[in-house]
Length: 72
Image (cartoon, rainbow, N blue to C red):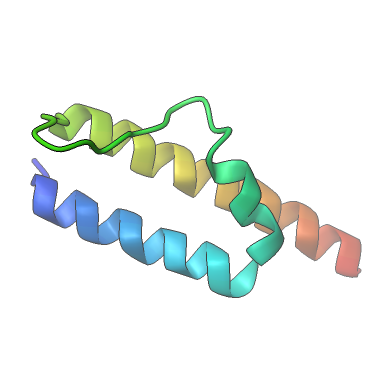
């Protein structure tokens, strides 16, 4: 099972990748169906972090595939 720390790190990495490679996609992250809001003292579960990370991966994968198809 993944830890909160590992998932936090993964989320930061994929978000940075999106901002670096596909900055136009960054504006849609806030509109994603799964969204984590951090507030002081909030307890975000590992399951919530995993869902958010998986949704980021899926959005990136679909967008990258469409982006590559347009280049051809």
